Amino acid sequence: MIDSRNPMKDRVAIAGASTTGFTARNTARSQTSLAAEASIDVLRLCGLRASDIDGICGSWPSAAVMQSTLGIPEITWSGNPLIPVVDHVAIAAAAVHSGLCNTVLVYHAAYRQAWNTSSALKDPYRRIATAGLSDPQPGPETMASSTGYTGWAARYMHEFNVPKEHFGLVAINDRSNAARNPAAAIRTPMSMQDYMNARMIRSPLSLLDMDIAVDGADAFVVTTAERAADMPLPPVLIQAAALGQRAKNEEDQTTSLREHGQQVVIEALKRKSDFWIDDIDVYFPYDGFTPITLNWIENAGWCAPGEAGAFLQSHWVEEEQRVLIDGRIPVNSHGGSLSEGATQGSGHIREAVHQLQGRAGDRQVDGARRALITAGGFFFNAQGLTLHRA
Image (cartoon, rainbow, N blue to C red; front, side, top):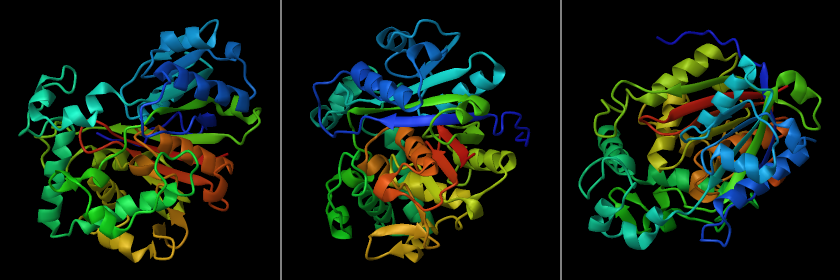
């Protein structure tokens, strides 16, 4: 049952967002140092001291480590949720609204771990033997974990009779947007020929269909709308959040492309929000794999199932090699997971906040006031946010 009850609507705000920027190579930095850098910067932007924080929320490193690292004297709430990072913002907002705390530091450090180095991932037997890679261990011929997206990508192409080039539009759009983003890991231009010639990883998805492992971090301050109004930057109000799952949410058990977590998120956001796609200024569909993006576009209501590629083509700006919906709404204006880097959604949220606060630099959309973020994939991790400037 999905209802419209939303007592938290517009009562909690994101007061600021910061990033270290992202690097698609192993750096000499630790995950903690990256998270700390972004956190210190967002506290400075919001005019806060460590002692003003009474809630901490992040996945890696732990909240306990971050509290000690930053010298936060006391907290009354902490959370270590699973990714994507909409989960972090949602539970932080709920904690603020409930009174468990007043001001939460939300952080996320993306990091190039040993399990995603290319030499190990090229060896199917080593993949099986890698502890913690997934549970159950995927093996070379199952649909567990991220491998499931290759199966559903093939299903998408077959069911709707669309070419692989439709996936390529997502990748090219991201790369063109990343060229305007100094924080992005990869900013070099990409053509459709580049995309089609990319090394195949597991058919039909190639290297350029998959997000980029990076070092870097984002951080946010989440607090009451009233307190955010007294801080230096314009508050970004959280109108609605949704974390959606269907009963069969495993990669190999999902019923169909028409029945998974994305549809739950969309229905919940539409019922709980005062605006939808006709009223937004920036859109952020998740792009950990290119077919995820096409599905989000369709499920959000921009077009019918199977028509997302044609929709992107109809809104394509040839001279800029990117999408502007109706000539004005960019899609993943920061470059997304495919070009800024695999931030597990923190980059999408940060860019939305920057756009709504007028801090997006060369990417800034004039008069941006409303944003839709549809993060995560099909299965257990579909998530969404509607945000607007106060």
